[in-house]
Structures are given as C-alpha cells and as structure tokens.
Length: 328
Image 1 (tube, rainbow, N blue to C red):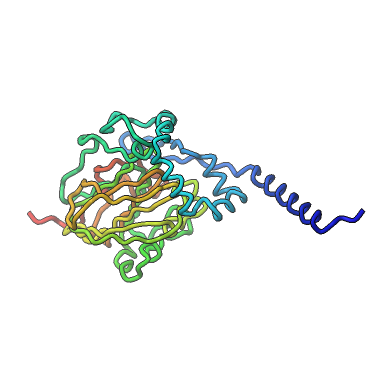
Image 2: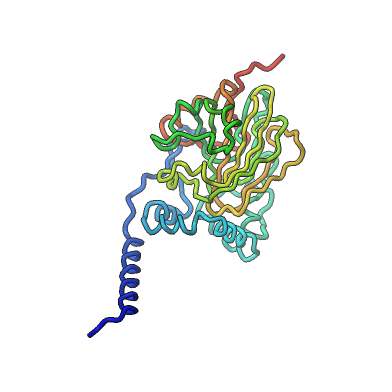
C-alpha cells in the first residue's frame, strides 16, 4: 500500500505535536523557594508567588520557553490582559486574589471597586505610609522587596557572572558614564503589593524618557533564567536633581501582564513622598541609580543583598543617607 505525500506530512505533523505535548508535560527542575528578609523582625521568610507554576513552566520548560519567546513577552498579550482587568466583570477576581495572597485591605482608602485594576491601583489612607522627612534621607519609592549595591562596578547583579549593564539599561551611553561606578537600588513589586510609586527625595525633575522593550516577568523565578531582563523590558525614567543626592535616575520597569505605566505627577518640581504614578495589573519594578559617593545605603540592605536575599520595604521608609553634609 502506497502512502501519499499528504499522509506522510500529516504523520510528521502528528509526531511533532506528540513530541511537543511530551515536552510540555516534562517535569521542570525543582526551584528554590523565593526567600527574603523581613526588615522589622530580621527573620527569613518565604514568598507566596502568584502564578508560580505558570512562571516556572514558562522559564524552565522547553515548550514554555518557546511560548515565552513567541507570545508571553509580547506587548499585545500584556495589553490585552491588562485591559481586561479594566472591565466591570473583573471585580469577581478581587476577593479570591485578596484571600490567596493575604492582602491587608485595612489601609486602603476605599473597599468597593469598579474593576480589578481599580482595586490593583488602589490608593492608601494618608497615614498608611509615614515618610521620613529628613532632607538627608532617601526613602523607598514603593512597597516591595529591595536589593541594593553600593558600587555597581564591583557587584555581580542577581545571578553570579552577570553584571548590570548601565549603558543598555539607560539606552544612553553618555548619561550612563555618570553611573558606571554608582549605587544601584532595585525595588520589586509583587502582584500583592501596593502599586503606586512615589518620589524618594525632593528636587527638580527632567522630562520622562521612554524606552520600548519586552514584557518579561521580573519575578526571581524568571531572573534566575534571564538575568538581563531589566535591560530588555519596557521602561521609563526621570532624573531627580537634589543638592544632597545629585542627579538620581528613577526608572519604572514594566513586566508581564502590566497593562501600562501611568505617570500622575505634574510640573518639574517635586516633593519627597509625592505620588509619581502607578502600575496597572502585574508585577513590576522601580530602579534607582545614584552617582558615585552621593548616597550611603543602610547596612542591613547591603548585607542582605550580599547574602543573596531581598528585604521587605515600605514606601516612605528610609533606605539610605546622603554622603554630602547638609548646610546648617
């Protein structure tokens, strides 16, 4: 019996689909839990990861990686999903999300929401995040988990062997020269965190620079596989000029399922603790770059980072002090 070319082609396609199905179900290597330090208690804790199985599959399974390359990192996917979180029907997702991730809603200004994004970008009560008002203190711009490096040129970033590329990150070789041996601070916002970001010090601000890019996840489960994600994702930065801290680059980095980065501030003069903007649905990151010898990051944050752990931080909480003495 002769087998036609069409039959052979279909046989090959079915065989290929079978291989893909097997690979898709292939067990991924076990992942170390994401552990971090609670700054208040000093205890090491384990993070609850929203969509953990999905993240592990995307970044550590061959079919998942192909899906990531073809689809998941694309703007259209994050935009479509992010926009769906604006629909009134998305309200039903709020309570299960709150319950699963143990989100404290007592600090929120309101308890009723028109959509999931309305909940996700919720404002907090005015006294929920006290801001250290000392002019010589830099504060965290957001709730999240922080990594800090006193000198970028002397530190491996996230994964041993990968060095943070300031030129690629800023997409500006001339500007990057000011920060090659400066200080780097990364605040990672998980989906359960408060998702508005604020200015870490007062000063005058430059116009926003927007850099187009991909939408990879910024979760450590993804960073273990692709440490260069911060230099590949969509990002926006502003330079804050302050007499004690110099020119500080504040960058908001998008990520998978982030519908958009929204800037809410106006004018070119800002105050510490003032809202700068917010992220719609998804995990995301705020990065601060300081020039050399302008800031002394708090020791506990540096030590925890050196040990390979993030530290929980709240918006308005001190992260470091100026190395320039303020005039009396």
